Image 1 (spheres, rainbow, N blue to C red):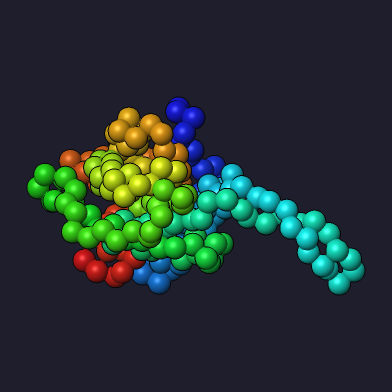
Image 2 (image 1 turned 180 degrees about the vertical axis):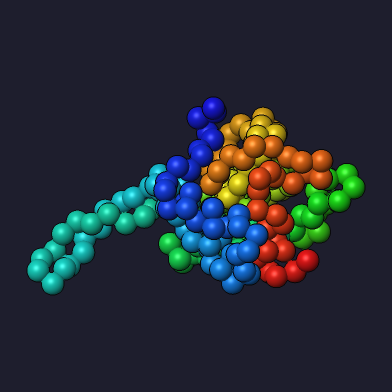
Length: 210
C-alpha cells in the first residue's frame, strides 16, 4: 500500500467502529463515537507536528520544554457529515481554524456538486486536515482537495472513518502528494455507491435525519 495511506489499527478505534456500525446505535451515541474516533485518529495523524523549545518555570525550577511550532492548523470538514468529526480535532488543538466545504452527492450520477466553500486565510502557511467520515467513490474527496489547493493549500491531510478500496485508489491517484488516514478499509461499494459493510449514511446518523 502507498506510504501516504495509513489504515488505523488501534484496538480502541476498532472497538468504537464496531459500535458505530451497529444499526441499533442511536443518534446521540453515534455522534459521540464519531467524535471519539476522530480524536483518536487525530492523535495519530498529528504526531509529525513540529515542536520547538521554550523556557518554562515549574513550581520547582526553570526548564526547557517542547511546544508546538511551525505551521498553524486548519480543520476543514466536508459538509455535512464532516462536521461530526470537527470537535474531536478541536479537543486536541483548540486554536485550530475551521473552514467549511459544501459538497453534496448527486444521487443519479454519484458526482460531487459544490454549494459552499469558506476557508481560513493564509492557507499556504497552514497544515490542512480535510474531514469526511466516508471515502466512498472518492469524488467528493478529490473535489475538496482540488478546492483547498486552489486556495493555496499545500500541506494537506485527508481523514476518514471508513474507506472503500475504489475511493481510496481514486483519491491517492488524483492527489499522490497528500496523506490519507482511514479508520478502516472496508470491502467494496454496492450498486448505490455505499460502502459495504459500512455504517449507512453517516450524515443522517449523525444528525438524526432520513
